[in-house]
Length: 360
Image (cartoon, rainbow, N blue to C red; front, side, top):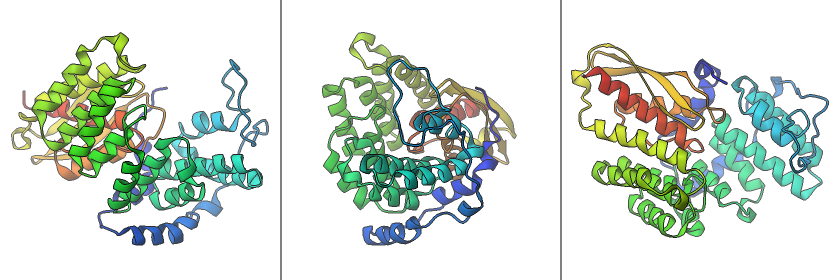
């Protein structure tokens, strides 16, 4: 479903909570913040009414095999399709998840499922890393069978100003077994580029998704400003035999083409040579192309607006990434939004294309 990006106004306040962190904190300081602020509910929480269909099963019942997608029945599907895809219902969704947690707190497995659902809402929708980390830790994240949950916790600490804890956790995780290279991404985000590249190399050589390893190596090199090697990695993805790559190879090749085109434009981008005006471009996102406009005024990037998209999850990237580009006044060295790497890449690439059009 195509949506105009009026989403920014819907969650600008939540976004600011995630992007305002520019301080450096010790692990102890972050732990204290998580234990105090993280243990509370947001100021708006009590004013939100509990709202869900009477047909919804609140016990985390799993759909039967080959059963049609029925979000009015299954809480997991309801959260995915009804809550996550509708920014106006994110707070309502959080209220519901607290209710589900209360109903299932005497069942160990369902209680953990509820807590991790609350953590995801705080992290990816509310963009509230302190409260997200509180619920990740409360759920016993160290016992999770999914390393990506631990990466999410590490991202919370990083967002709160600490790099030591993410490094420790990522070292404990070891190689990247995620679908989209989130471990490699976080190593690059915290500035440990050599480590990111070494983990990407392992993914290329040992993983069933070598295309993701090449992609993330390319993105790491792009953040480093090593455009020659970035281009080489992206070209390797494009040239890969589909039969020897992972299940996302078609998407990977589209991502690589978009990133390759953008990186080749980097050296020619000079804001001082761009006339005032608004310029349009698009690039491949997760679910389809993302179309945006870039407004330049007085030799500065004044605004970046996503005007059309088909992304359905984690809209934070639609404002987080443009804000980073505007703050830095460049498409170079921009880290992507945790949990929505592909969407962020598309915004960076489309911005580069739009600016390149302006100087032609």
